[in-house]
Amino acid sequence: MKEVSERERDLPSTIIEKLTRIAAENKETLSLSIGEPDFNLPRPLVRELKKIVRKHKQNNLNHYTSGQGIPELREAIARKLHKENKIKVSADEVLVTAGSQQALFAGFLSALDPGEEVILSNPGYLGYIPAIELVNGVPSYVPLKEEEKFVINPDLIKKAVTKKTRIILLNTPSNPTGTVLSKKILEEIADIAVDKDLFVFSDEAYEKLIYDGKKHISIGCFNGMKDYVLTFHTFSKSYALCGFRLGYAAGQQKMIDAMEKSTHYMSLCAPHVSQLLGVKALTLHPKYIEKMRKEYDQRRIFIVKRLNEMGLPTVKPEGAFYTFSNISEYNKNSFAFANALLKTEKVAVVPGTEFGSEGEGYIRLSYATEYAKIEKAMHRLERFLKKH
Image 1 (cartoon, rainbow, N blue to C red):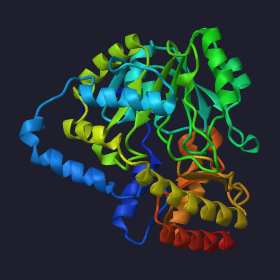
Image 2: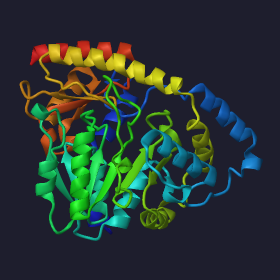
Image 3: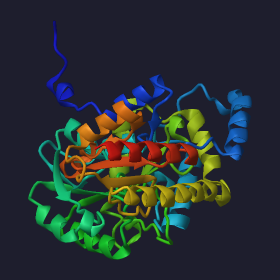
Image 4: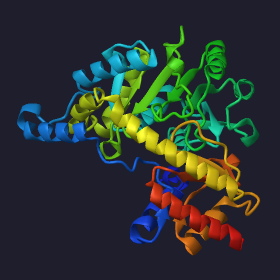
């Protein structure tokens, strides 16, 4: 029998996929593992979706769009980036994709030759490493430390740069730690990128989910950074549009053109109906996003307090909707801890090793889960710890 490719055999299966399946099969399981909003589609978007479908013939919904995305969405994205992120790009410098993960993959395909390196944080979002390795790139890790509140150290980035380095990959606010990078840190990283002539890939999926008066800053807004920065966004988190698969990238024309060629061979284009809905989403009144953000904040305050009271040291996240908690006093093996918790108490959390070697001794909990379920899960977790 023919084997699958070595590349595919080496591709890791994520624990999150298994946890999702287990949670779906067992209704008693309380899942704090999934990284997607638990809110319904905002009402104006529901109404807009109905309108789009009613006018499906007029909208040509059953036809492909341009591979770069429909002009009205790219124009709306360019306006949004200028107004909210202070990034000046034209509609031609925007690429619409089937989620930001596809945009990142296209970016790696377009910027990396085999053996070239990407500097990224460890722990970091679990989707980065497989995407880099699938294009025969090489991850180069900068460790994050709990005592430094998981803030990436520009000096370590500078030390990690080699002749093969091509990209510095940033994620702010971050998954899994919830860290929001300050202007000072971003300016230091920008200086490194310019000095070493490197790309910066800035993944800003959680840009609107910020707490404690913190401010999201896009590194692409700094003077002189347009030739260096590709900015990646998604409609999944802020607008609860995960299943519609809609994201985008913005930056220098040469890279956007190259990425469009790559995405053509992946999906031809992002879903037509999703793109039309995206135009409306960008005009959504801020109160709908703020309602979700406030609810996340309420849950965040509660879950961080409870975790610390239980003896699981947890740095208060400044953004996104995750906690990254230290479980090393109970079990230095995060997978064993998460597995035992799932089996005995039916609470699903993600072992820190899913996010890199520096995640060992930690678990990630998602508070994109209704408050009552979080309360119940905390009770079960406390009971589990008392037995261990």
